[in-house]
Each structure stands twice: as C-alpha cells, then as structure tokens.
Image 1 (cartoon, rainbow, N blue to C red):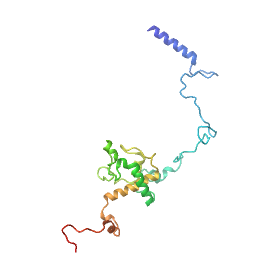
Image 2 (tube, rainbow, N blue to C red; image 1 turned 180 degrees about the horizontal axis):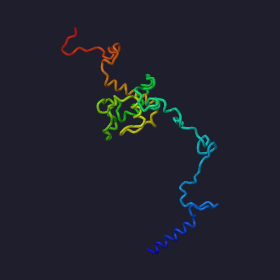
Image 3 (cartoon, rainbow, N blue to C red; image 1 turned 90 degrees about the vertical axis):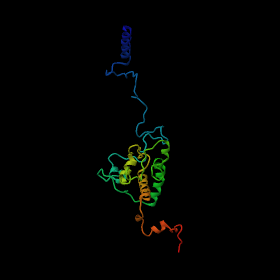
Length: 218
C-alpha cells in the first residue's frame, strides 16, 4: 500500500511541476493536459472565410428566423392566440379559400394521414405497426377534438400533445392553418346533417331518388 501512496505522491508532484499550479500568474502559457476545447478554430465576423461557398464568415439568418423583441407573438396568425392573452382564437384568422383548402388536403395527407388516416378516423398506416392510441379527429365524446377551437388545434400541431410530437419545425404556419381548414371540412363531411346544406345545393347532392323494390313508379 505504501508503494501506491508513494507512486501517487510522485505523480502529483510531476503533474504540478509540469502543468503549473492552477491560478498562478505567469507570462508563459500553461501546458494544458485537458484543453476542453478552450482554444479552437473560429471565424471572425465580417471577414472572408473558406467554410462557406460564398466566402463570407457571417451568413444571413435562415428562413423563418424571428428577431428577439419583434411583434411576432402579437399576431394570432403566428400563435393561434388572441393578441395579449392566453386564449385561443375561435376560428382561422385568415381567409379560407379554395387554394388554402387544396393546400391543406395535400399537407394533411403528407403530415397527418400516416397516423390519423386520410379520413381523420385514427386508422392510419402506423396502426399496423403497433401504434394503437391515435386520436379519432371525428370523435366528439372521448377526444373532444371537434369541440376544440381552431387556435387550440394550431397549438397542438405546433407543440404536440400527449404522444403526438411537435410539428412546428416541420410544417409552416400557413400550412398549419390550411391543415385545420381541411380538417374542419373532413369533420363537417362526417358529422354534418342535411339541414347544414343550403336548400339550393341539396338537390344536387342527393340526386334522383330510385324507386324502392316492389313499388312501381307511376
């Protein structure tokens, strides 16, 4: 055991003599055994460098970057909430057009249908691989998705909820609202009633009524 302590003391003396006492003042740079990345190559701002193809060390911010202190969070379009409050907006804060609905259908089928299914019934392809707990977007009793405001659904898409991960970094703000617009159309197609259809449009949806079997049409 004494040889162990002797070896340890000699090792400490050698390290201190070689690396120097920490905190001592000297004009000579100390010998760093573990530099811990204290010194590493870097590019100075506003200078030329060979790291990037354009030869500049300072690059423009990536698309979607928001400056600190900006009014980004004051817009319901960006947050899904009423400005200055924590309340979700009730409806989509932008015009719902045919182009927005078409975009929403495309984005829904790409980003949402793998889990929720193309009809939004929670029967996407992932259910075949063990994901059994997936929200049925038409279920008004257990999931309460139908009762949620558009702003709350926007928040869920952005930050995720329960087992659903966040899609804020994958789906743009406008595409999130487009998905919500298309989702509302899906829900209306499943949960809508005959009285919801305008009177002038109803005959075009029902079409001619076929006579029942055993009854002669006069």
